[in-house]
Image 1 (cartoon, rainbow, N blue to C red):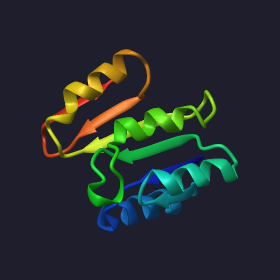
Image 2 (image 1 turned 120 degrees about the vertical axis):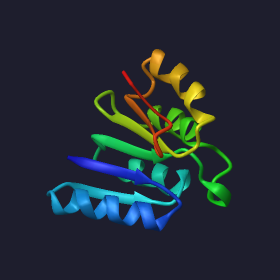
Image 3 (image 1 turned 45 degrees about the horizontal axis):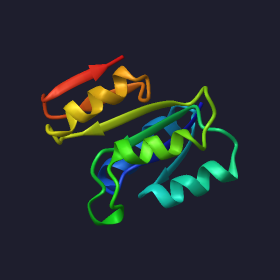
Image 4 (image 1 turned 90 degrees about the horizontal axis):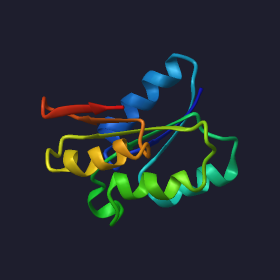
Length: 116
């Protein structure tokens, strides 16, 4: 499986990327939307895109906005996951799940888990 991981925090991105690589997956990990778009353009297609919700100073957009943009660049078979410890993000995400825009949303620290 080819996986793209977007997260500004190397303490999260690095171990998650390593976990998938050890399991034999082809992983590209980036800090924000610009290198993600470049990785998508370079191909081949990604099977899974995992994104953080909040990118701090790295990107003015949040994970939902970034995934919405990336969907226009990826194939129909690509799946999407957004992770966050930000409780306020969950209602916004639910709208995207209901529309089928995002495959799975995970709020960490016991806040919630919303899946479709």
